[in-house]
Amino acid sequence: MRNVILRTISIIVGILPVVAVTSRSTAEIYDASTFEPSPFICSSDQSTNLTVFLEFQPGAEKVRLSIPRGYFDPRLKWRDSTTRQGQVLRIHGERFTPWPPELLPKRQEGPYVGILLTDYRPMDSVAEHFATRIRGYTVTDVPEFYAVDSILGLETLVSDAPPSRDPETSVASDTDLYISRNSSGQITDVITCKKPGSVPYPGCRHYMESPLVDFDIDYSLKLLPHWQHMSRNARAFVSCITSNSL
Image 1 (tube, helix red, strand yellow):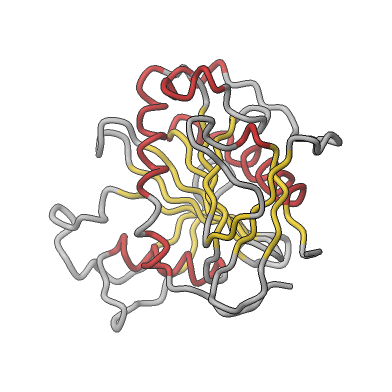
Image 2 (cartoon, rainbow, N blue to C red):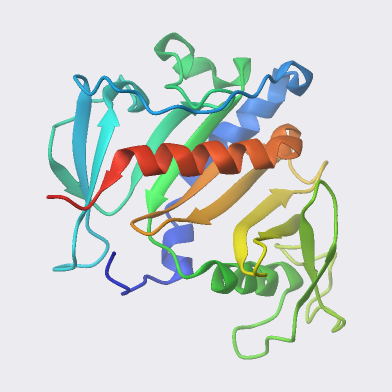
């Protein structure tokens, strides 16, 4: 199990915009009606795999990732057995195979997904963090939030308390927040999406966790109806590439 020393959400959020840009360009011309989901299956061929070690805190236990080279940006030189705090991968959203190198500069031509492997707080804390930001509350003045049935089998976090800032001027008011729970009522997925019309090319950030590494995937708002496919394949993909045997 990974070390339970967790970094603050605000620090993590600060390094994510690099991936977010890709989802906005994806929505530009991609027709989501052509999306054909298929299950991800781990590859048995590891001849092209690169090893990356994630170290979330100095001196903490490292997480070993064994990742096929095709998931990395081919325009960059990657060295085997490097250590970093997070890793971004380029993925085809339908099959969770590597994004075709020839389409890397043209992510709008298909269901591009960016995946960030890193470390977060537990999902209930992540949900409360984003609920606080979206509703405009300060960290010291957080009201009680509860979930209501929403779209696509998801729930929306809401509060009876009014926002502490004018919704028309709040920088976070252009975002919807969804959660999913397991049969025990625990939050398993947290999804934030820009509302249609709020930005030119709205996208979603989908947060999940696993025993060894937490991760989020970034995709076009048009692909939100396929969030369950994204969740299943992302978890299967992460379980294939993570290992604690150093």
